[in-house]
Image 1 (cartoon, rainbow, N blue to C red):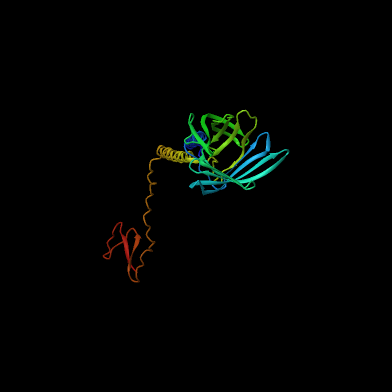
Image 2: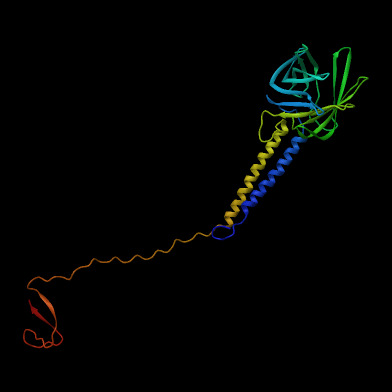
Amino acid sequence: MNPGGKAIPMKSSRIGTLAAAVLIVGMSLGVLAINVAADSPPVWSVGDYWKFSDPTDPQNYSRFEVSKIDAKKTVAGETFDCYELTLEQTVKQGSQYQSLTGTLWMRKTDLAYVAIHIPVFGITVSYNPPRKLFDWPLEVGRIWTWVDDSNPPNKVTYTYKVEGTETVTTKAGTFETFRISEKDDTTWSTTRFTWYSSVAGFQVKTKTDGSDSSMELAEYKHATGGLFPAGFGPESMMFWFLIIGLVVIIAVVAMVLLARRKKKGAQPAMAPPAMMPAAPPQQAYQPPPQYPQGGYQQQPYQPGATDQSGRVVPGASQMVRR
């Protein structure tokens, strides 16, 4: 109710409800898209990191942090555009843990491993061609291979397959992922599984078939920050385009409803109030004329008055000389 007691149409509340509903639906669709879609590799920034740990042994962990986004790495005469990551890892020896640090180079176009350098051992492992863990776009049923010929004449072929999608819960959160299998063609072949998440922008879990241990994402950070942490890859751009589009639609709908409300509630123009007629100007008071000395003035009627000839003039005033 307004102060005058008249009910106000609830158009503004309808606008707010409509805006909230559209925004929630849009955000749900956007989150669904970035959770599942993996049309191309993610785009990383300096400071992004991922820490993986064994759920049964948190002291056993690996941590990757992006230190450069425009690094160059040459392998067998070929130079690749890479992300350079700082690698920190613990290795359990008996009851003790040893910390190792190193550098990892990953090709920007597909996140393939190019090289790993471990200073404490003084070794660098190079991959020629780069070890392709993912093949974009990721989709269920997709298969690709990578051949390791670093130990000629022996060659090992690794076959990868997107087995399906799966919801995975780790210490870092719950993610919609693609489950990818990796199997080599050696006689002692084992199958290794990787779960990739577009939201994390990296794998969130790894496990070797037949083993009880696994490495799961314990924490991660996107240096770019923002309202939504899922800021990786073109699917993120589509999400923001969707949000911007929804904001524009909400603004247009709000303006239309407000315009209709104003039109419906508009009052006809009122004529200006009638003006009271102005009072006629009052004349200034003027005293009666003063006759000069020796003049004549009219005297009240006196019965029997006579004129100069002595005749009586009935009803006439007598003129006297002053």
